[in-house]
Amino acid sequence: MKIVIATRNAHKLEEIHAIFNFQGLEVCSARDFPDVPDTIEDRDTFEGNAIKKAQELCEATGLMAMADDSGLEVETLDGEPGVYSARYAGEPCNYAANNAKLLRELEGKENRRARFRTVIALARPGEKPLTVEGKCEGVIIDELRGSHGFGYDPLFVPDGFEQTFAELPAEVKNKISHRANALAEASKHWKHFFQSLDTK
Ligand code: IMP
Image 1 (tube, rainbow, N blue to C red):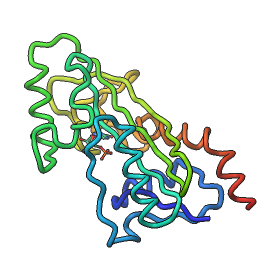
Image 2 (cartoon, rainbow, N blue to C red):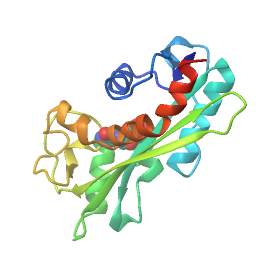
Image 3 (cartoon, rainbow, N blue to C red):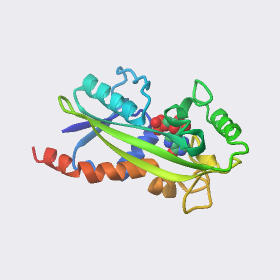
Image 4 (cartoon, rainbow, N blue to C red):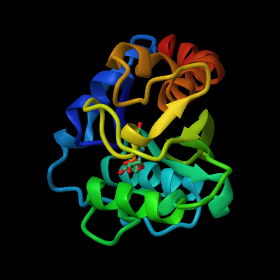
């Protein structure tokens, strides 16, 4: 049994491998299918985008496919940037411009609560897609700190820590992040499903 992961990002793939137990499934990624076009992420929820990505890859390859969609939700901005996290300051995705826009939007705001969210979808030929979710709660600070990671990491301090995601070592972020939590949920909820495939 083979599963394809909907990413061309080697770093993301490594992170998924480190956390997720595929129970003896053969794992490949979208990098192995260069002719399959990337999904247009035009749904208005993380779940909608993750399902769309997984289903399109499943249909194009005939394989079981796993996809994730993530972003930052800021409480006082009614959940923005949300599904628009990558292109908050416009296309193409520019992390520095996104962070600058977020700081402008939060100027003078007292409530700095925010959370990262990830939804992972699993699409199987001829079956309904499955989804799980992971979160990481924290606050947005008012200056950029740290150089690790990507995206909004220099502005996000997770609950229980004083450093931003960009200051914390990757091993720490990868234990507590929204993606890690979603992958742990997937391992927990889909374990029996993968075990049953393994014996077929
Ligand atoms: P994706 O769905 O994982 O590609 O994430 C979409 C966007 O959300 C990224 O371009 C980032 O702006 C933001 N994002 C997602 N995960 C993280 C993270 O772990 N740290 C910082 N920003 C993130």
